[in-house]
Length: 204
Image (cartoon, rainbow, N blue to C red; front, side, top):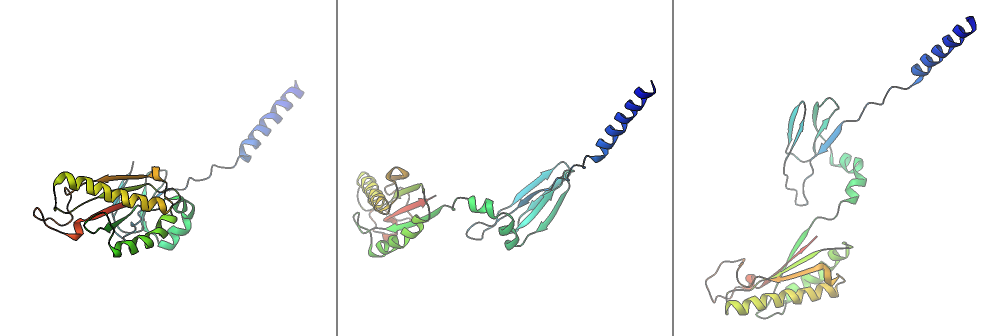
């Protein structure tokens, strides 16, 4: 019996020692939200809510850290610190959408200025390995509406062909025409307006 009690006592001591040797759980890092400006520098806002309350972030690089108890610590980060801390996530972010406008003569021929502009745009296209492109053609109010519908589509197709020649996959380009229905510069009917003879390009 004495031997059995001794063995039981040793097991109990070993179990207790094992429990004491288990390291305490590591404290959980707080969840963090950082508000970034967009490419133009414009700033939106975001509301961070938790069980303990809420905070509104509305300035560039403002942050809110939420701990496991729901407490929110508000602060301001430096741009350099944000770039360093979230370099991997920011590097995986796809490029922001960009937009271009090219202008046309009376027919479906780009103006000389827009031809030069398109050459500059090629570098931006090359930086996007798999872009999705939307091309929308427009006209001024000279001519019948149905003719302008066809002309606007023809202009969009002209730009689509240029994009394909620049290396963008044809199936990644959507080309449509709006005719004279979405004038950049409102005019009366039968008014020649160079700024309305355009193609808008959206790349994402």
